[in-house]
Every structure is written in structure tokens, then in C-alpha cells.
Image 1 (tube, rainbow, N blue to C red):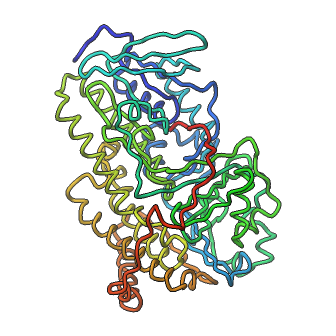
Image 2: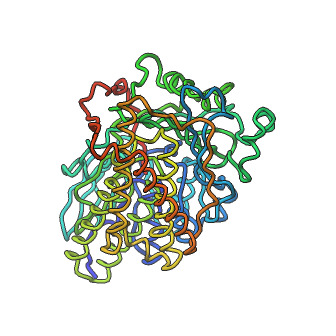
Image 3: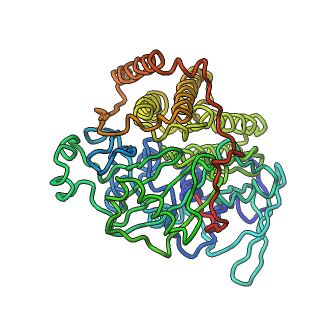
Length: 524
């Protein structure tokens, strides 16, 4: 075990979920470890990252032990649901719907991050972490294999502390990545987002909507309202996440190459203006108002750090990378990186050699990020608004996620969280499969766009899935979707084999970035 004359063993920069959960894991395995959490805010505010999926829910429930808290203070999530329209869709009942017919099998949650993050931080402090709050980090000097130096400002006092390890959990501020030149914006994925919390959004399961659209109401046996509902269009999608107490988080994410965003007025008014053009959003927001003190926007969402760890530092959560809010991978990323950080620091304290471990962590997590982007997200916004293409994509994406990723911790336990997706050789064929069908769907959508055929299958259709489990029989859903993909290629897709529509570029005339008003960065 390496010892040093430092003030602390570990200093964690950021006290939200990624930093606090790392502290919980460290102190559980290393009682008496001197851990300091530095948090700049007096109190957490609401932030994005409110919908969890199966890996992050496993991490929160079975690793952090928060299942009872989640059930008492937040909402159980009922899967994913998508809504599609075209110029012929006049109302909610005519929109096409994609989602589950029944309740979900595995737990996931819709969480208010302001209260959830406070609870994880409280548990970290109960486990033995010291908390310094509010405090701003002004400088970090890294010394591989030695003592790290952190300069802090609390009120009007500047102080310097030392630690053997620094964990950067500063979220999109990405303190270490930006300071050391590791921060890389993902220019191949130029997305932007605007969001707020709303009051008065209609209840998806209300008697009013059921009476007006009886066939629509009877089609689904589960609950629509506590799903993560998504309203989609060409090059964009909108999330609708209900929170405990009645507020609803509503935001739009769009590809800046494909979408013209309203340019005039307040961000919240532009968000409303944009959504009200869609018949489903227009129905749900008819009497709703957004919180004018809780409106945000950010562009160029995707980024990564070329370095995630060294002998004395490690990056976790959004401080290490961010892909896209679609499918909510950010909380999964926190689960993997927090587990890796705690494991790395514990290994060094046991006296294990660091160079090979650090090289493997940087290699595996870098490969995982690149593979996730290249397989799932590259050019996905080209076909997000197409009911038939998204129906195939959702079944295949979720089916393979359950088969190869979500199943692993239930089979192997928490040690599965030390193996990031697509980092092992056995996963590479699945990476190539996912990459291939997403590329093909994007190419088919480009041809439709060029020919003015987008959205032609978006009226009055439903794709209601029985639901995924961890049973081998789920492979049947994947096989049937692959068969439907083959049929699509034979009936339509073959045109794009020889008639390739060009990929839109960042310099396209379709590009329309938002006005230059940026909300304060939030921490993961």
C-alpha cells in the first residue's frame, strides 16, 4: 500500500450522484479512508438525467442499496414510449405509437435529481466522507504516483489541500479534462437541447383523454403516464418525464444540421413554440405553463476526455464523457465509471501495480464510448421521426441491450459493472450488427427525405411490445425484428444501395444553432 503525507487519501470534486456514489463505494470497501467531497453548490437544483434504465437502476438499488428510498420518494418508470405524426395527423388519437403494452419486468425510475443527489451525498457523509460546501475548485496540480494538490475557495478564503487521489466528478464542467487539454467535442454529433419543468401537463392516462380517444386508451394495458414518453420529428425528439409531486420535465434535443430552431424570444417560449407544432405535444401542453426560473439550453452535447485515469486521478460520470440523452445512457455511464474509480483506488491501496490497470481502464472506457456512439447514435437523428424505422431500431436496440448488457449484473453481480459495454472481444460482433442496421436505417431515411417521403407511415399505427425479460426466449423478438429488417431491405432499402442520398454535414444550410445564451453547467 502506498502512503503519503497528504491531507486526504481521496478528494472528490463534485458531490452529485457520480461523486457521492464513488465515495460510498470507496468507504464501503475501505473503512477509515480519508475522503473529502468538494461541492460548489449550497443545495442541488434540478438537472437532466432524471430517467434511469436497467443498469443504473441496478446500481442504485442493489449496489447503493437505495430501493426503498426510490420507491418512497420517486416514481417507478414504465419503460419507453414514442409518438409519431405527419401532416395528416390531427390529434393524439391519430398519432402512431411505439412502446410497451404491459408493465415493465425490471426496475427503473423517474427521479428528481435535486432530492436524489442530496440523498446519495447524505449517505456518503454517513459512511464517513467529509463534505466541504459550498467550495469552488480553482486549480488542480497532478503529480503521477505522488500527492495531488487542490486549490479551493470557500467564501473569501483560499486554501490548498493535498490528496493521493483526485476523483473528478464535476459533470459537464469537466475540470480536469478541460484544464489538461483532454476535452474533445464530438463534432460528428452536433446536438443541442432546450428544457424546463412544467405544471399542468395533461395526464396520459386521464379519463378525459380516454373518453375522447377510446380506441387509443384501450390499446395499452399498462400505464402510459409514468413511461418516459418521447414525441418525435425529423431530426429531433422530446422527452416527457413526470416527477414526484406533479411537475413534468419536458425538453427537446435536436441535430443542429437538420432542425431550424426558433430564434426569437425567451428560451422557454421558443421551446413551447416548437412543441406546439406537434399534435401530441399540443394536446398535452394545452393548459400547461413552464417554470420561468427553471429553463435551460445547451448545444454541442456530446464530448469525451481522451484520458480517464492516471496514477493519482480518475474521471467519473459526465466529467469523463457524455453521449446523448436518448436512451438515458448517462446514468449507466455513472454506474460503470464510479465502479471503476473505486476499484482502481482500492487496487492501488492494496499495493497492486498501476500502469497496466490504468492503461486498461483508459483503453476499455475509450473503446466503450466510441463504440456506443458509432453503433447507436451516429446519424440516428436522421430517422428518429420515422415510425417504421424506429420500431425496428427500438426492438433491436433494447433487445440487444437486455441480452448483452442489462443481464450481466443480474448474472455476475456488481463485478459486471467493471466491464464497460463493447470493451470485450465477445461483444464486437454485436457492435457491428448494431452499427450496420442503424447505418441502413439512416440511409433509407435520407432517401425518403430527398424524395419527400418522410413520415408517410406515421399515422394511425401502433407497435406495442410485450416487453423484454432476461430469458433466452427474448431472442425471438430480436430474430423477428431482423426478419422485418430484411423485408424492408428487399422492398425499399435496395434503392439506397445504388441511389445513395448524401449525409447532411455540419456546414449544411439546414444548420440552425440556438441563440448564444447558455445555462450554468450541471454536475453529474
